[in-house]
Length: 465
Image (cartoon, rainbow, N blue to C red; front, side):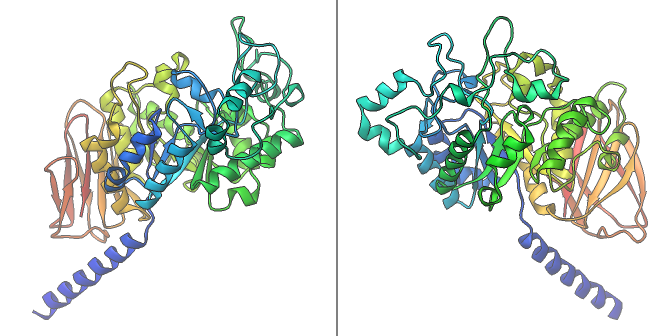
């Protein structure tokens, strides 16, 4: 009787300690609301919060034209927000709505280049006389949208751009960081140089966004910027209170040429985060035909995953389905679900969940932000945030790991059921307690010194106490 009482008291203490830890942890799942109008995000702010997201990455807040998604990445002016997805007024309203729900606002930032307007004009004055005339025709409106500076003159000239030279060798770091993205006879995107004036304008821009409530910057095409440019713009004062992460696309981690030439120097030369392309390469290799799940046991130990504090993890980015050169990276739909279970279930990194408007025509990621399975994974992630991870079992087909004493993740990539017997003597996992799968009705209840997990074919389980 005394032993039973002590056990009950210990269980109550552990529950209280676990709940205290869960409330103190800060969960961070980023919703990439790709190409969403700002008004739509504003309208869904409460829903986004209720689904468990901690922040929302929104379309580049600047002046751009054209209805295509890629037009948002062709800046005409930093001094105003105005494009088909919204303006400064709607951005402010969206930001206020999200922050009112306790959700952070992350902005997609384009600092490397300006819009390709060679078909319209030959000069490199931005935003150009046509846009200046537009500003002058309705000064009250445009001054209301103004973030900084004056709208009566151009803010960039020919002296603020590098040579009209296309990158022809993507292994050449100098070319990649100083020449233009172009080809096939196209003159490309005018590449900015980090002179004092350009840096000042970009700093003013980022500071203005911070006053609108932005607390995260995704640096687009960071691979194409020199470290001096990145660091001169993103000073400690600008980065204060802001999560900065760069887009540096690589084909893998340590030993892979793009990683060694671009991503490693970026990480060594800044304190920023970055997309975890090394981990993504391991996920693809593990889930692919002939691959082994042992790649995902501890990829960081051999340089195939970024440090937890620097990593933004993902299963799909906006470039993968929408750019023909990256479509080979699209995962099979089931593999993508298994990949999300791994990314959301593991300890480390900031998971990013992509949700679009079917820009690619695949019809796979429309309203993905509220898919029942993905939001259940977010619930697991948030409950297990900050808890340690231990691998319990793995093979070519499967991987099982625990998150503290709160949760267990099991993934089976193969076409038949996998069973795995795991010793529980001395385990931190609780006995005689239900761990319920957030993705199904499966329950794990440990009642002895061994437990046999059963993972159906091509399935993930995320059992949560």
